[in-house]
Length: 465
Length: 68
Image (cartoon, rainbow over the protein chains, first blue to last red):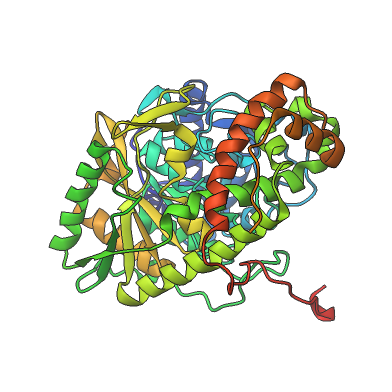
């Protein structure tokens, strides 16, 4: 990894602003890294080197002429291949869309292009985002830069592998059960899932309409704030988009959590996680305490039912979306995704409705807890990255599926739509461990500030594979 | 609350073929029956929760002319 590709977005932005680095130099450094390491990580499905250099040169000319669009001007990004890109193939990680070239950009793609970002290409994804490991894609599995025999996590696996591996400083992702935060946690980087409706999903291939969120995977919480400043806001193209005031996220970071009350929900989140993971997270909680936060044990009474309800919602909505393709192109899906879609045929309508009613209950319980505390803190995921191809694992003597275990801690915040952030907080057996903050609806600033304060006090986010 | 019976490979195959229009090979129907039984057992617990007075999280919104 070169000096440039080790830098975070905020540092690169500062370097461009002071003219110590140019967009062309930065873009070239990351393209060189992609050339060198993408075959090993399988992070990119499509690399747009020529177009990227043209964008970088244009940004450089603008900046030299004094026309600076903002802090993201001239900085590289890659988009999950679930995001539509006008004139550029968008596969969704599936053979079904092998040759699909959309006419329009997703809203997030457009907003970041308008902010002057340089797109280096499209990133690998678990097929149609329907899986949490990044293993099943028409492009093959994305690989974890800390140990390429292990999963990157998914579904935004290429995004996480690229950022952790120094192929990009930031990438877009989507999160339905944790698909931004799970790969960020597996790969030791930062991942933000904003509140449902805060960032437009228009132009992103849906998995599950009532649970899909868009957001960034970055090196730091500060970088996530920079991106959120550019992509948050109302979009009439997205029926779920929230028409609410958007605060200034980056400017609002104080780095102080003194006096902040942080709830610790032990049941499920801690008690069903690997013991070495919990030990690392406990150390992170001590850091928060040292920073002046007040840690409070809290209970979310119905949390144990969250996974069953989420499953009913995935099965119903994803199968409905894919119904036409499943009828006549079933063999083009990967085996795992096809099985999930076919299982959706068996679900009763009343179970889907029960699951949606359960979301109301869980949302009420979380809202109640968040009147008593400002934030929740949990392990990002219950495990460290598993070997590619491994379907089950043992946690505290209990054999279970990798899919269920990895989704357990992230999914409740998709069910409730609350903002959640994961940040790296240490290692267990050489693999990254992550801390998750979740907050009140539309309080992205609260979770980002907690992550920023933690990262100001620790150096885990600076570790590179 | 109605009480369901354990799901069989015949049920899976029939629903897939007759309701959903996605015929399944007998071996796939058998494999899915086991997975489904596990899932439906979890969903049984959802059905037993006190959700009587809660509306689903998805609610209908009339479309206004200027927002079409």
